Length: 70
Image (cartoon, rainbow, N blue to C red; front, side, top):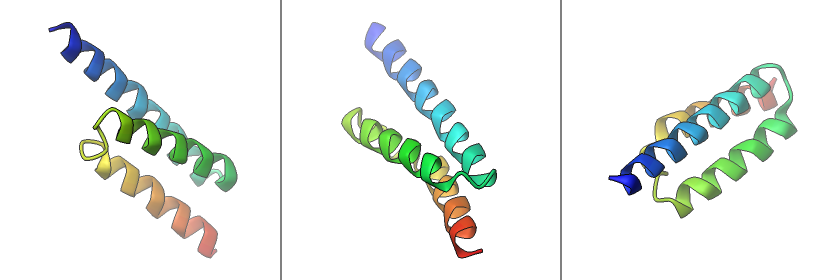
């Protein structure tokens, strides 16, 4: 039970950081957003949560792509 709680807590932290990265990207702070995204993806891979967070990860990448093409 404790392991499950830790996993949920970790996932929640990563979701919060992904939303922060998305906000930074929308504000035009592309370098900071990329750095946060890179850290989150690395940690998600380590914790086997990448698949669960893939929707948010792809959303942040899409915002970054739009900002860098402008």
